Every structure is written in structure tokens, then in C-alpha cells.
Image (tube, rainbow, N blue to C red):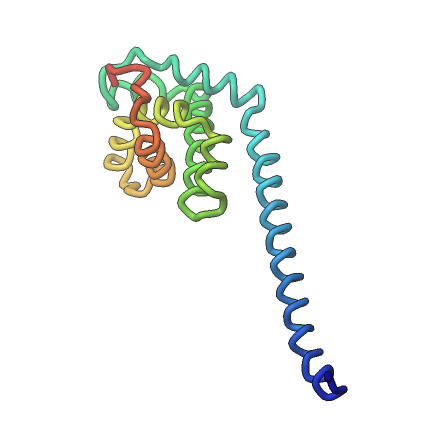
Amino acid sequence: MVTLETVLDMVPALGVIVALIYYSLTIRNTEQARHRELILQRFQGYSLDYTKSFAYVLDYTDWEDAEDWERKYRADPEIWSKWLYVMRIHNLAGILLKERMADANLIFQLYPPMSIINVWEQFEPVVRYTRESRKSPALFEPFEFIYNEAKKRHPEILPRNPLH
């Protein structure tokens, strides 16, 4: 037979269980909201400006090495700003992945691995040169991080432009 004292002893334990369930549901809902927010923020990265800049930047293929790229493109504010915009969008993806602000599956759905690999491989010489010449050793490290992750997950993706 259950006594009143036994029931009263169980009430605090029941309260803790209810609190744990509530806390778990709150964490789950917060995580889902964070993912939705990330998707909406990323959608801005696929704006017409981004799409035009991305296509424009990938056409920068008539350079021999990073110094040649600097002479041809860095001095032009329009070209430089488009290149920097594309590089920063991919760098943001790397930050989200590196800092575990979103899981890798979500990141690679939002930021196609082919895009990450193609842009990094095309401009890696420029980034390395800029790191050395401008004494910025951490320049675009998150972008390089996400590139390495994309290569691990998708070794079948070949460089778009094997010359650079």
C-alpha cells in the first residue's frame, strides 16, 4: 500500500524528471531554430550579387602565378571586391563548420563541396602569397579548413581549372 509519505517523497523526483524533459525539448527546439536561422542567413549568400560575383570570379583564369594575379586584379576595385566577397562567403562557411555552429551535413548542403573545392583550388596560390607578402598567416584559414573537410568527404571532385 502506498502511503502519503511515499507519494510526497516521489513528488520532487517527478519534478526533476519533468524539468529534464522540458529542458531536453527546449534544447532541441533551440537547435532547430538555430538551423533555420542559419539557412535563412545563408540564403542571403545566394543573392543575385553573390551569384554574379561567383561566376565573375571563377573566370579569373588568365594569370600565371599569384604575383601576376595581384598585378592584374587586385588594383581593380570592382574585381577585388567581388573576389573578396566570394572568399568571405566561403570563409564564413568554414567558421560555421570549424566552430561547430552547425553540423557538417548541413554546411555541405548549404555550401556545395564542388563550389568550395573549385574556388579554393583556383585561388590557393593567391591566398598563400597574400599570407606571406602581407604577413597575414591566418588569412582565410576557416575557408582552408572547410576545403580540407570537403576534400576528405568528396575526393572524387576534381579541380575545375587544373592550371592553378
